[in-house]
Length: 333
Length: 202
Image 1: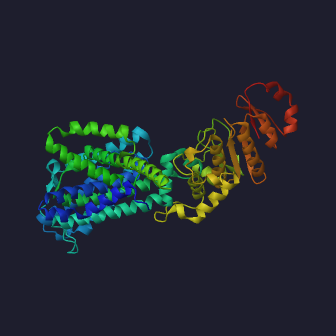
Image 2: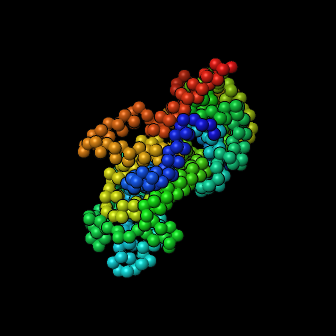
Image 3: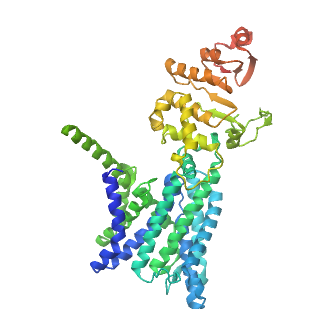
């Protein structure tokens, strides 16, 4: 692999994310660990969305629903553990398992119905389902309703990983992000991934050469939901608070924006997008209360002028770079 | 025939099976492969990937999540052989969208072949091609017709009479004659309709 600007950028970004807590401790600014921890969690969500949106062409406008499912598994479990003394319910492995199971089931139901439609209808149906679950959470007084649940403790991983400290939670997030990146790298290059990408490229053709496209798309939809469910578990532990707004449709929109901003259908695009999104949010909201007024036009510019998102710009930079370096080599000859 | 549009009446018998109501992807499993009138390929993938995907479609289910498909010899090697059959092997690593129109048609035929068909349905494979390009296709088809049945829909008389063993003449969606090429040339109804807008099936 050649050291093109894009690869150098991605390596620096990932290494940088790896040392954030160390730097934050050194400069005595623990706030940054928390901020970047959020970036990691939403990166996982965006990476999972990218599997179906970027590689599969399925514009799911309800992806945050899995963040909600994962979060509520932690919220409900921890509440029973604290209030009713049922300690095993705060077990992190159990919560992750439940989040995986429930996210997969939800994905199966939503996908089985919405994947029968295409285009705008698909967007609207996934949106409708996620809003339905959002209102279930709002209406559920037993588990906090609109106000949500405060967590008095984080998930307990049998003492294997102690995430009471922000730094250890940060590295748990980081490892899970790396795992989900590796998983999606394997997936998109496998036979399964070829089918998903082929269906995005030309669905009619896929059918004509003999692929039952629906079942592959459904499985991809479920896998993406499951990964995002795990991100939900992490998110609840990070904020130590769960309320329905984690699965509000604006959150789903945020995930789409992150993916598009970073670069659809590229491995690291969603990570770049999530980091850039939260960075801009933090930076702009520090300057003005009306930060969205500036953020909106920036997004419009990215969509118009950089079709491949930030990663697309880096690819463009690579091309410019290789052109220039070949010119230089010729001069030397 | 291909199942994209449901028929109004009648039934389709293929190799002894009634496939009238069979969904598109299963028709392919029966051994029916088609090319499209408008080039219908995966434009953002390489030529090789295009054919490898067609090979994959008939290599069992695709719920393989881990192994890198672009390094699987059982997909890649047959794919390059099919490309060689249509004379595209030197274009294997090009992105399909960059190929010329004629090469797209050749690629279409390679993909159809890769699905291991008993019958190949070609919908105007020479549409919009120059004489030189269509000569290349005719050559390919002449080789292929010895190996499998080809149903060719084509306006170009020269091509039809060069390739066909049996011809059906359609006028306004109705077959007016089915016979061997020499008999078709002498058929009065065909001669009467000859200057109209008809399609020839071989």
